[in-house]
Structures are given as structure tokens and as C-alpha cells.
Length: 600
Image (cartoon, rainbow, N blue to C red; front, top):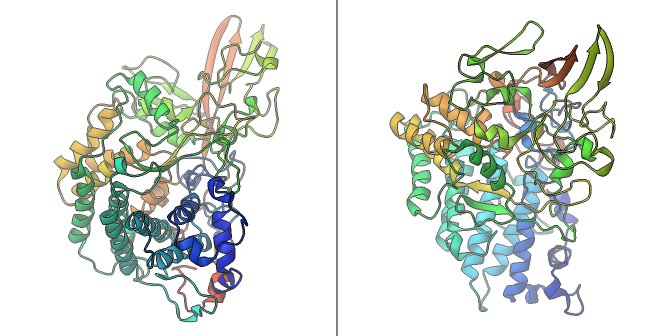
């Protein structure tokens, strides 16, 4: 940090944040705002804070979503693997893309926030400076919460860096101290901020600060940080009062619920087809007005792109290669198989695998041989699978696909024992479009794409949802369960299930809770934190990530379709130390007194 800060002047920092604000840049000269002018003008202060919002990491950035470090999604198209997945992550080997798991990015953001908090303390002009202070405290809590879940206890910094600061004396606070600091900021923010209906859309709100507190306290109470295996006070509590921790987590979620300002979106249940359409549409939204959305990030297609988090192109990144997209982050077969049937029963209660890994219907309830039929409605909204209607083809392929489906199957015609024709799917590497950018997995992440955006040509403009009410309800359910109140836990789990058109849970409440969190929040950067805090990574991270191949054979007029499970990506190799991310060795060389995480 010391080296980085010595390269930054206050003038350069202010200039960085202010450039791009069209209503301010008409002033002349544009590059000579004095320190006094910036911090005495509410409009300039708001513009500075807006740039801090723009630097908040989100799951639709150019980074790959964190689901590829779980049992959800493939990394890229499945042909590569991250150092974390292969067990090779170290202080000198992070890989090219860590998303929110970035120590330097986090502390750069903390500096910007602390600078603003320091400067506005002397503000005497008009405008609601307490509201700004609340936003900054929330953003600091948010940034630290992203870091604590990856690293554990942090170096807690409450004031802006100075050019002559010496960080040799800075050390990491304990996990408990870091949690307390985040909660303190969140509590203070909630007192200063207005309700969602009172705040400018996209800015921090009272509900957001309280929901953030709920998330942090749930993480803190979990097995990773409060169980018997905690190695030291940097990464968890030693001999904590687990009941008190779970009570705090439950009460924080209850406080959000008691506000009465948020509610689950109506997806049209019990009509399961309507639920599929509306669940998908929920993530197509271009604003944050829905009462389930607590806080998120909106995007415009005409942004200037001066910040690399401004531009989102998930239709290009996730879409079919037959439409000249890149086919990235496709759902793994393990995720597909985990979706329940429409009646709430397990998929493998009705299907089995043959000796050559083909899916065989063994059900007396569901008659279709197609394994994608009759599934949890969220499956159809989240996963783009073979023969699903998606987008019209470009003119050169309309004759092969006039409907506009996602086409992964190989079609083979056999007459008198001889193959007379064979055509590969339009959205495969063997298809007629491009031979490098189809997913190896066979599936695409439909969730977060927009049906009417042409990925090859257009940017997306749907929103990323950081916090939503469904998570708060699931937090409340989990904390209640851990406190022995199964009935309350089941009630709140069923709220989310029933809204999705699914029947009440049947069976073990703990397994039902894990299922709901997995399925409801696919791709939302929640799963990696869940499987770590539950300490089940070694149980659920697939050793061999799987995908699907589909073959349709017409032999002497009779059609047979097979769905066959195949290896889709390099093997994972989880090791215990990977429950925490290491601190970069360069950072430790600048501040050697900072303690490294266990196992590194």
C-alpha cells in the first residue's frame, strides 16, 4: 500500500473522479479544481461519491463470475482452470482474474472513501451532508465485507493515506474486530440513510445497510469462522458463544423484515411456466424499482466506458457461438442435475445413468425421456439448454433454424446401416459459424442475459443486483434453524420455494435450505461464500466438471435421442488452505508485519 500511495497525489485523485461529469465539465479550466472548491460544493461531492459507486465490483464486470470456483459454472468455456480450482493458488500465483478477491483494489477503494469522509467533516454548505456520510460509511462497510469473506481479519484503516505514511506498523485486526468494525459502519449508515423510496435509485439505503449487516453476521456465525477448526483469531473466533452469534444473525435479518418496506417479487406462482418467464425477466430489469431489490447497479448502453466496470456485455460473453458470442461460464452438469423435478422430488429419483453415462428415464411419474422436462421452474430461467428457443439466427443460418433455438445436438441419419448425413449443432465448435468459442459444457447461463440484445453488436443494460430480499429471508431461515427453530426455518424457506412455484419442502430442513440457496442464487456470487462458510467445499466441488453431448439418430425412419454425460473441464483439486485467499507476496514485502493466512 505504501508504494501505491506514494504514486498518488490528491490532485490526481480528485481529477480522476471528477472527469466525465458532463454537467460539471462545462466549467473552465477542467483540471484545476482546488481542494477547497471540491469539498465545499455539494454537487462536486456527489460526483466524487458517484465514482466510488462505479468502482464497486459487480458480477457483470469483465471478470468471470465466481460461480466457476464452485459446482455452478465452468470457467470460461471449460477448457481452462483457475489456480484456486487446481489447488495451485499461492501468494505468488493468483491467476489473471480474481473479481472481488483483490486486496489492492479493496484498499484503493477504502482510501477514496476515507478521503471523502475526512473532507466532508468540515462541510458547512447546503445539502444533506449526513446522507453523504451515510453513503460513504455504507460503501466502506461494503468494501470491507467483500474482503473479510475472502481474507479474514483485515488492516482496518479509518483515515485517508498521507504521502508520508509509514505502514510498517500496520497489522491485521482479528476477525472479530473486523466484523465489529463493519457492523458499526453499517449501523451508523442505516441511521443516516433514507429508505429506498427516499433515496436516489442506485445509492445506498437504510435497507441496504441493514441487509449488509445481516449477510456479514450470518457469515461470521458459520462453521468456517466460528466452528471448532478455526486456526487463529485472524480467520475466526476462538471458543465463541455460537448461540449468541446465531442470535445476532437472526436478529439482523429480522430487523430488515420488520421494516416492512421490502417484499418478494411476484413471479406468477403457482403457474410454473409463468414463474420461469418472470424469474428470467427479473434479472433482465434495467432499473432497481422492484420491491425485492434492496441494492444494485444500473447500466447504460451509451456510457463513455472511462471505467471498465461501466460496460457490460454478458450476451456476448455468455451467449451461443452460433450467434458469434463467446459461450463462457456455462452451467455444469452437476448443477443441472441438482435441480429438482417440478413436484419437488430429486432428479435422480426419476432418472439414472447407463453404463456409458447416458440418461435413462426410470420414472413412473414423469414420462418424457428428455431430462430437461418437468423441472424446477428456475431451471428453465437460468440454464440455456439444447432446443430451447432463444434468439433469431442471422440471415445466413435462418434456413437451418427458422425458429431460433439453442442448438447443441448432432443429427445423424442412417439408412441400411450406413451414415448418409450428419450435421453438428449450430452452437458447437463443429458447427458452421466459429470453431473456437462454443462452451465445452453444452449449457449456457441464460440468467443475466437479455433476450432482445444482440450480443455480437450491442452492450447490455440490465442491472446487477447486489442485495435482494430473498437472501434476507434465507438468512433468517438459516439462523433460526441453527438456533433450533426448525418450524420457523421451514416457513421462510417455503416462502422462497412457493414464490418459485415449488411445493413446500419435504424432508430434511437443513438440506432444503442448502438447496434453496444454491438454486435461487445461481451465478449471483453467493455460492462460493456459502460452501466455504459451511465448510463443504471438499464435498461439493466436483473433482471432474461434467457437461453433456446430445445425439439424435434417425435410423430407417426411427428417431432416437441420447443425452450423455461427458467430462467438460480440467479436474478440480481442492486443498484445505483454499478456504481462505492468500495475501499477495508483494503486499507482504511492503508490510512484512502483516500475517499471512493459514497454509500459505
